[in-house]
Length: 322
Image 1 (cartoon, one colour):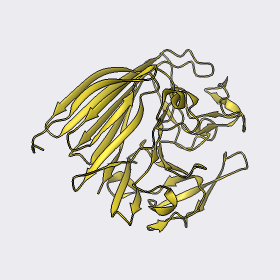
Image 2 (image 1 turned 90 degrees about the vertical axis):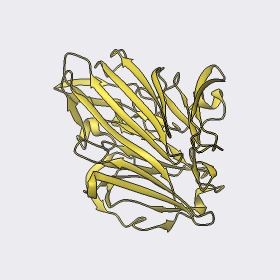
Image 3 (image 1 turned 120 degrees about the vertical axis):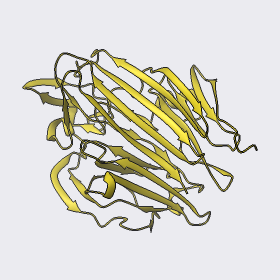
Image 4 (image 1 turned 60 degrees about the horizontal axis):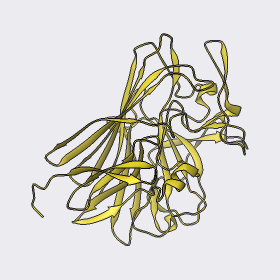
């Protein structure tokens, strides 16, 4: 393979959708489905000339539309849950669609199944990126606040992936805002039981039986250093403590193959200062979710941002294979 080989960008059918594919001769690359939430459906990174698929994506459009586990969903304008789908903002009550019937919550934002438009792409040296946008008009029940959401996906040096989110209040009034991402990671093993996990310095969000935070923060004694996941079941939220360089890293480690996956998130003021870890029942992957706010932030205010007309939020998270 030539050392200066570049990435290519192509479009391929994915059932009734199209998948935007960014590929390198080394095997590294990623795939995005713009027409369904700009979902990152594939991510392959390279270590020592060996390609490793690290995202547990959708294999068919039927699976995508069923959306059972919100794989790689973009969580805007709120991550996780809103209790009963109800909240108040500036003295006005709102009712969001309840899309998690088991607990009667609104869950995982409003954009996970909306069509985005690819507005740009670029290949430069060892880097490739694509930019996708969604113009939300305020047409969904319970969130009448227009915004522009831009997502930039980039891959560089064959082993680094970066997502930069830019959210702009395009309306005439202030709006409540939070953001997150719901990827499921794999790392060369059949189950996550065989992997090790380490969390950044953090405190656990205590929740009630409906998984709504109580407001109490608990000392965290889970995975303070690399620890086998084994049969541990997790669906736990954390608030990240102040970090050097305003960057927090969650680490997955495959000891058998000597693979390390670092999932980092900017925690600078108003950045991704929260984290949710979830092990689905199939245990083929683990959700490591960077979030700017806690579950039910529209009610408890933990991490919630109020953006004025024209105000812009931007921050990044990413993945590195070592």
